[in-house]
Length: 78
Image (cartoon, rainbow, N blue to C red; front, side, top):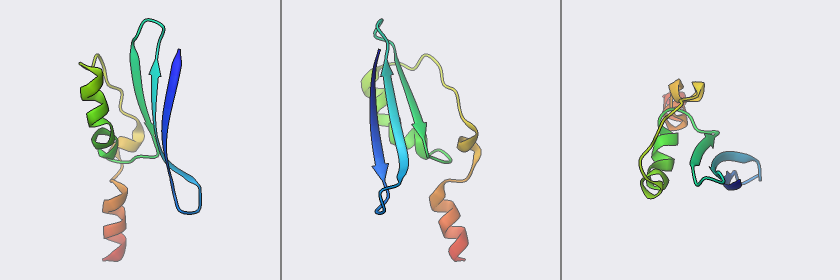
């Protein structure tokens, strides 16, 4: 098994968003996101999924059903 991780850090160095790609010995891939809310995770992984091929399944975490952070920031400014 091989795991690749793409990490986005805040200016202070804290990990904010991560995309983890796991490749099994059989060549099956799994893409998992951490730190995303709303459909930002799908937007962030869209090109990866296109490159990897047809999706076999999808599991949405509870964060998917939360408003995207940009929406939260906009609402806070109002």
